[in-house]
Length: 286
Ligand SMILES: [Zn+2]
Ligand SMILES: [Zn+2]
Image (cartoon, protein in one colour):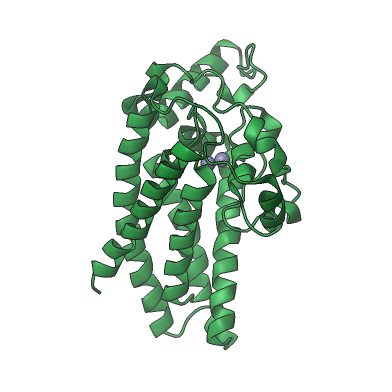
């Protein structure tokens, strides 16, 4: 298999990042400091790590999917679905898997520490889109690969989903103002920038909502939807992680491990009691 197409798929993502960063200058949703706390430098490091990792994982995914197809395996081939139906089912199933893994990362404490890297960003803009710990990249990939291989999904549909996911991630994080009427219309089907901004709130009921990646109806179906009108007004970040020391690239890469160690020490001191202190967001405390 030629690695050229995998490399080529990065191009639209980089163009989207550049365009979104430009639009943010002219039509910002809110005035915020991009460089405060060193978060921009960290985001650019994580962008490089995430895209490099994604190239390797996408290549493995394409190889695996092609093998399953050629060997006639997977639900779609057993059901003998046509090309269009297979395409549609694949995109929907991969988006459902992405909703599930995102929700699990909020609900399982060890996974939350990994996902915390994304949520502690004190501002939200296009560079937040790929701010994730490499472990999160592998975790998301595992759910996608398991779903794709079980379906015997067409490699082209998988590639389309990965591309749409990356492009919409840039769009939904971008600090751009979308007319309220347009957002209200789109959000019935699609995860809009305002809808995802709610997910970056530091108020826990809002953080634990709006998990969807492409299709907003997964949040409506599973009753985790918060109206997007709140998006422009939420306070970003997680209490306890705003300082520059928590935002450096070294600190965020160690976050899943350091938090676990501190949590277990705190819980030993307190005899297993929850270490929540003064914060109303107990997951932000270490
Ligand atoms: Zn999240
Ligand atoms: Zn996000």
